[in-house]
Length: 366
Image 1 (tube, rainbow, N blue to C red):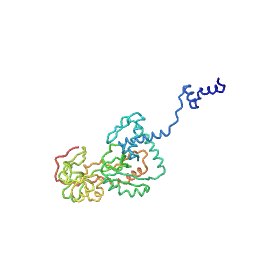
Image 2: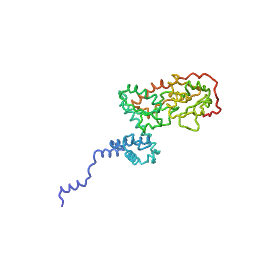
Image 3: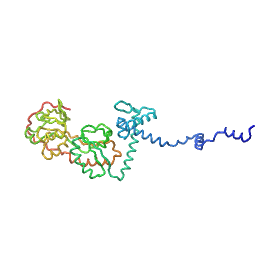
Image 4: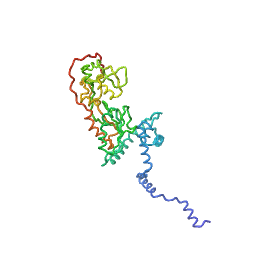
């Protein structure tokens, strides 16, 4: 027969332990019809999710896990694993994958819209706070077309760096297109007639026009063309590789004209084209920034001023206007101040009328 103490011990073993205080609160709240209090935040997991969303967003922007890894200073496999874990957690596929690139699925595009908005706010806040009361600093990577970079940006570099001694400048001059984000540039400088079809912000720094010009000796020898068709009777120097048909894009009050020319010579750089014109080899058709100083000094003279385009510009292209880094903003503002006097050309007086040597019969309207 069990003693009294043994019976009490057995009863204690059968009696369930009382619930902890948090559980009692949830039980009482549920009985009262209220929602239970939220579970405590899982800070480490949330931080990990934010990192995964950052990796995902950079992969969407670069259309490549490898390029995203380069930008994030990590490995391609690390990016791939992050994305895979995110897809598993969300239960959807975020990318269509090929051997050469990745593209977001519909679900991936929707997620990117939200991620990009959040990341822009975070980046803007970080840059704004970091830039409070601080001077521009760090390495500034700039891509520029060859003529623009060599003839106009590089000569201004000393003045900019003297103004901002904590900035280091990497100027890469190349006429090939670049991916600003993927290749790690802070901004790109380009000459064109309109904004590029991309997600980049474009700020116009200077206004250009196209110019048809030649040396005074050439014009005196061959005469002044008065209409676009007269170009068929002139030696024209063409920018670009040799082609079967060459055209110059001019304008009339009625609209754009595509004017056929017969090139005497082809050149693949604007600098070579300019030197050939200075030597009296023929007429060139170039953006005004290529020959601004030559026209001002009289080494070259312009013709067909009423037919040249006036819709060209120099643009600074960069990923985002919000939260722009101080070094980038300082450089763009500096170029907007210094470039126009160097490259913009006031409308020249019309050429003196002379009898044209020859009129062209065929002008193709664009």
